Amino acid sequence: MSKSLPADSVGLVEPRKLHIDEPLPLDCGKRLDSYDFVYETYGELNADASNALLICHALSGDHHAAGYHHPDDAKPGWWDKCVGPGKPIDTNRFFVVCPSNLGGYKGSTGPGSINPETGRHYGPDFPVVTVRDWVRSQNVLRERLGIPYWAAVAGGSLGGMQVMQWAIDFPELIRHAVVIAAAPKLSAQNIAFNEIARQAIVTDPEFHGGRYYEHGVVPRRGLMLARMLGHITYLSDEAMRAKFGRDLRAGRINYGFDVEFQVESYLRYQGQSFVDRFDANTYLLMTKALDYFDPAADFGDDLAKAFARATARFLVVSFTSDWRFSPARSREIVDALVDAGKAVSYAEIEAEVGHDDFLLTMPHYVRTLGGYLDRVAREAER
Image (tube, rainbow, N blue to C red; front, side):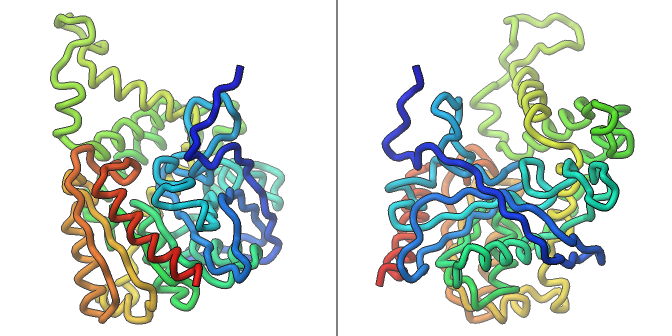
């Protein structure tokens, strides 16, 4: 018997696919002559199309932000805690759109897609994409959906970077920018973490130069190690200590190199499960997009000048336990917005988990996000 779905869920949802036949120029100098977009929508577009909200996903996210594809699904979409009827992103009031980014692995054109020019998987031939490229492609989706502008664009981590790029590149098309647990550019330490993860993947014997699809294999060990490393950076020391401490799996030390500590078991599980739901070439592309993001670079390394054209109002949110994208990095964004004379609200949330806090529902976070978006919704309802 199928389980009953929660009352505050958007319920059963189906992904949609849109084929785009117009060329998309890319920052790397190449272009996609055509491509597919997979996306989901929740809620209803109002009469004057003024209540549309775009969700931009992070590194391991996709189009499935909320609801269920099947009543027996073990888990809902990745941001279900915040998206749904009566939730901060209230689908009774907003028409929510969440696409999978190009270069992804769940339907939107990416390395695992067939290259129409060769008849083979793109694999390593898929062009390197940037946050700016994603924003351009999302704007094409907006046009095809008949949405005149976004009431708000929201996202966490890499999603928050896309939000900032929207405000800079298409100021007339975004009313509010919700930037959560993000940074104006990666630190050298973060770039280093990404490079170690990529090296784990590309040196896996099953990687085959990125053409593992044609060999019927997956670089499992490399992708597992990349995820294990990444997952450590998403959690705070306090969270890991509280969850695992130095607990031993068997209750005693075995003086060997197999799993002994509970945290080792947890990381291996996270890595192994990630391999079954993610693509290695996509991981390489997403981490490069993170590395390359630096909107101030085109403005003499002056972030305030980068934000000069923005007309959106901003909400910037950080979490005290997030050491990968620390509150100091969010304050850099806020300071640049203030220097540029832009309207910005800032909230630093007391939290414990780490970078992944943006996916959760601490009361202060829910009140902050919900209160701000209530104002956005009321503007759309006028």
